[in-house]
Amino acid sequence: LAGFTIFSILGYLANELGVDVKDVIKGGGSTLAFVSYPDVLARFAVAPQFFATMFFLMLFTLGIGSASALTGCVITIICDQFPLWKKWLVTLVICILGFFISMFYVTPQGQFILTLIDYYGGGFIIFILAALEVIAVQWVYGINNFCRDIEFMLGRKTGWYWKFCWAGLIPTVLLVVLAYVVFNSKPLKHGIYVFGPVAIGVGLVLTVIAVSMLPILFSSGVFKRLRKGMGCFEAVVDVFRPSSKWGPADPVLRVQYIDFVAGRGKDQQMEGIDNQATDIESHRF
Image (cartoon, rainbow, N blue to C red; front, side, top):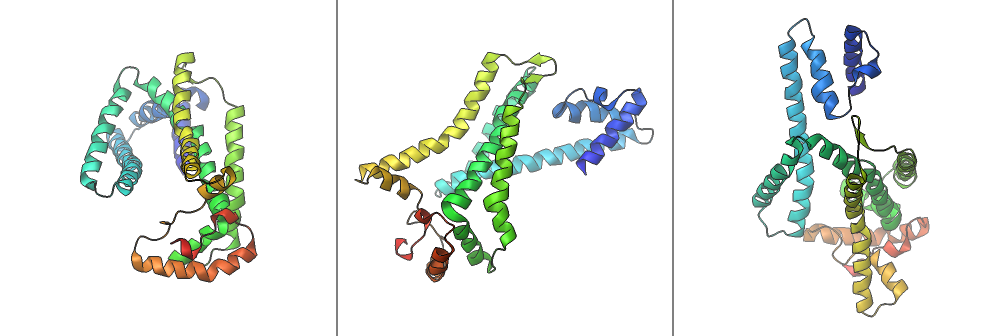
């Protein structure tokens, strides 16, 4: 729907200017939203002010919605990790920090910073993290364990279609797209400006910081187990096991979950798809 809307507008502008559509687009992202699209609205013969107002109102509400989703993830993580902290105070601090950090984007060089961070912090790195997340849940934790938890929460079994998508199709598509993006990447530029080695280095640091959390936490978990006297292989296997705290936080639901897992344990062993290192035994609770 967005594609039909955008290209119909750009087609109208190309017809007005007598040029091809590719010559109308002066840039993607923010340039398309704040330059090309408003230019079309200003050329409307009927009530251009009304449509311009509605368009920027839409952008405002879209920005509020995106900000709520992004900050909500950070707030939830912090509040879950530190439950004694007041949520309203965490929200206030995150919003204030986000406001001051975003001031960089309204400086004269803000568009260059936005392009750099969007590419390295919100571009192909998403495919890396998404692929690792899907693989971790469906192949490390196990597709059967995951579907069993869904059945416990929703009271219905998961069909083969969803299992196929989660365990096979989605990881494959993400890895294929990631490979395509990496092998077909072009020099990063904003307009006619090509980013130099220093800017590329800063972008790569952002990517490394985001991805490095996984091996760091994994190594930390293995090291803690080695200090407890476990062997190397045993420590690695134990890292992939759910902790003794895994399960519903509510005591009543926790007991029900333990009984549910115990009743499904035999069926899971017969299916033989999951990583056996992630099997949850009732006595671990």
